[in-house]
Image 1 (cartoon, rainbow, N blue to C red):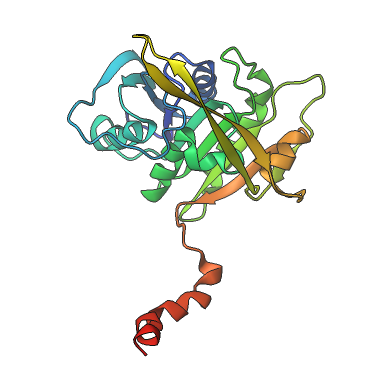
Image 2 (image 1 turned 60 degrees about the vertical axis):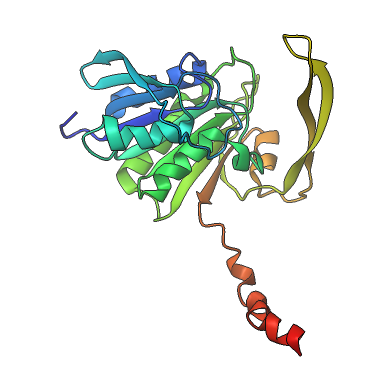
Amino acid sequence: MHGNKPLILVTNDDGFQAKGIRKLAALMRPLGEVVVISTQQVMSAKGHSITTTPTLTAILVKEEPGYREYVCNGTPVDCIKIGYQWLLDRLPDLVVSGINHGSNASTNVIYSGTMAAAIEACMDGIDAIGFSLDCYDPEADFDHLDDYITAITRNVLEEGLPDGVCLNVNFPKRSEAPIRGLRICRQAKAKWIEAYTQCEDEKGGSCLKLGGQFVYEDSGEDTDYWALQNNYVSLVPTQFDLTATSHLQSMHRFETILESYEN
């Protein structure tokens, strides 16, 4: 694809038939030339995993002027890598991932395949946004998100993002009340307390099923979780550099730790 329009790469982790990616692809088409590379199966909670065995495929399933769609049997990060290393003749101007069926606020971002795709693009210097809806229903209503997604995307296309930063955008599920606005947030402090239950697999053997409870441990009103609970859109500037920079100075003690134990 060539032309004056920006090239937008769309992916997800919920599979090519998910309502979320259908909505996102439709919203991107008026904004540029669009290539969709979606996962063949649900890849939720796959994080930043990649496929290292030579079994990846990306099948073209639809082609129209200014639009192509592929289905990939790999992970969301595979979709990004295959996209601009194999299927595209140039780097995309923007990567958008989602719309995820389920929140990726707080520590969910660590597990998220949706956000891993955005972070992968960010690592390669490409502006990227992950969009998620705080509703796990496969038939979730996404129609209240159109204006926000379009406005956020247009702004990134026009203004760009800081180097090493992508956006983690989470939306409250549809309710009788309209969304109250958008908040720039920090990632909330929270965690999952996992619980495994024993079950039977399809062959009658014993297996384990993961469940759990999300525990919110943050009293701040500037977090993504608070925003969602109060019917705001949350936007968290997210980076792939995991260095705890505020603690670098205090960690210098480790440089002489061997000397102290030898003495």
